[in-house]
Image: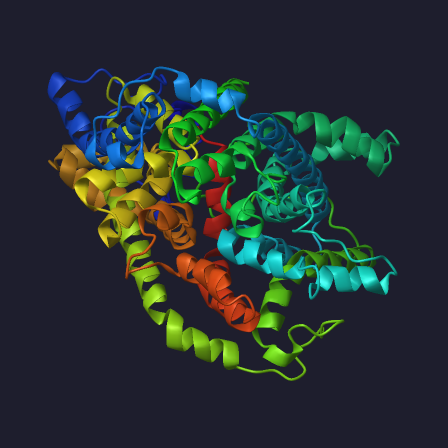
Length: 329
Length: 291
């Protein structure tokens, strides 16, 4: 993804550091790797060696171990001592037949879709709002980053206490409006709503920042032209902003999707996936199988995890394609 | 045109839009303040609860302000949580060092030396970012169990660095490929070797991307709960995220202490926002809109 050639060079370096003499013309302008002598290749791979070794040891190998876990019949004993028998796809069959599978799938889809929709909608509205410069706009926009920067355990435990059935401020506020208290975290019909709410709150800043940076690239002259044609703000949004923002929107949503599929901390800290699986997603289910119970089921846990990796990869590849399309256009 | 938000560009693109009149912007400021207040209410609530006395904790309706403020919660943080904060600090700094040491040379190679196969490697970095942490945790657990590496600070640093290394390589690559090529050429003409070019010219000029990468590496490892929970469960050197988590489990009642810990655990994020906000926004976009 070397696109040096396509990058504007003007903004790359402070002018004070401009080279005094450039004896040879710029050679990197074709966008292709420069064919250097063989020693050059060796030097380059020398610089890459640490990271390649690192990826092999700390990405590829854990993933391989995980795949291995999912294909063997592990017990706690054989997990420690080794020698678990190969069992093919038995763990996967077990997972598919598990009564938790269908609810976990439903919750994963719901949690992801609803989170994405509200994060994106709120992020876009705020981005458009902050795109008009007004006093304090930069400061306020910076403050909007706070939820995204906080450790997830902090956000999740704060939301837990706010949503507490008896002493939470949310139920107190509902009480002022005359509505009855809701068992946000302890009722099976509300737990998924609660964790989704917290997740939307955490995800809005990310959407805001990305969409805001996308808005910066829409030339102001387009808006002026549209305004001259007598369009109102609403029409300008739907006819200028939204269509021109589509590539950025696609990337924001796909990336949000990959990140939301991964969400584990928030749900685990707030509800542990309960009560009775009502907020269990693939991520929390996989963790519970592997680590949550007294009797760990590493094989099925790893199998659920690998399903999650597969889903994430499919959308991840879509994301990379969208990105490439955007770069090419 | 592509909104290729540049990872370490610090200057803002000026909006070429007619400046609205003063009166037109006042209601926007008011609305902006209101929206920010709503958004940050949970943060305020955390601070409020951290100062609330035990006997007021279950009051209904709860006090909107800490009218009978107490520092009880913070005293307990000082008593009990300091070692955890120390561990988190060590793990965070360690993660930053590992990440920068691995990623900066790699970014240099991919951006400036551009070997065959570099594109494949960049692609793998993108893919690596999409693997869920719990899956990595399970693999790490199996490996660390074999190696006897569980509950070790070094083990946690290595695991946490996997959160940041692919991102860091991509940020460095994007930044370094925007440095003027003539610079590298000039260094070569002056007789500088590749290592020297990297160390004395490219790296100092990439200071901004080093800051961005370090901030995110620190923040991610500081906030990490998944690896801490799986790889460091019962150890003596637990990070602060586990400190809070076990707090919630053990004494359900002392929410002022829990929230005080949460406030303290949020301090790095707050500091970063105040001191280095531009790098944060740069990092968010860099993570998404890469070249």
